[in-house]
Length: 60
Ligand SMILES: [Zn+2]
Image (cartoon, rainbow, N blue to C red):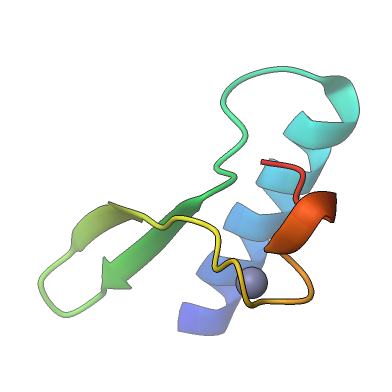
């Protein structure tokens, strides 16, 4: 059930990205504490040493 909620959130974000609407969530980490029913968002910056998000090919 928890994985279903996360999958639905990810699918929603993917649809928004495709449609170009809403806020992207890029650079954000969303955490869900299901037992306490709390959502928390942290901002993460790109790691310059990371081949995916760092360096000159970083896209946000
Ligand atoms: Zn990275």
